[in-house]
Length: 107
Image (cartoon, rainbow, N blue to C red; front, side, top):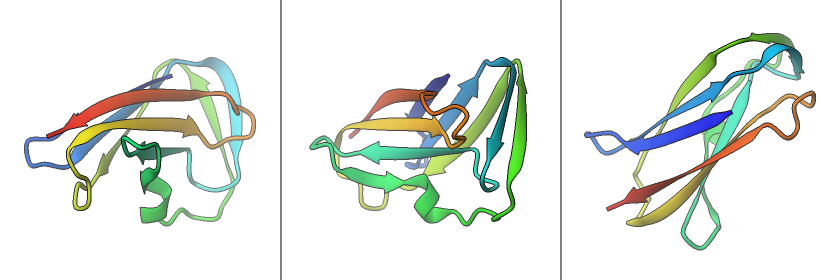
């Protein structure tokens, strides 16, 4: 799993999660497939993607057979300049250790 986060020209953060699993089936408790947190330079959470999105409560199944990508955006309204750490993970109990980390410098 890889995670990339960059500052979009308009100022918000653009992110991409890529998962390259093959032959893996994962069950999910809701329509949510991943989550992302952005940590301040001091380690405290500045933003959690799932706090801004309402997911359908219906369970689901995802069959991973090669390349799977998701994109997301994070607003910069309260983010001060500094180096932030983004962490993403798959929200299925079947894949508890599938995480990725990326850094992004805000100026």
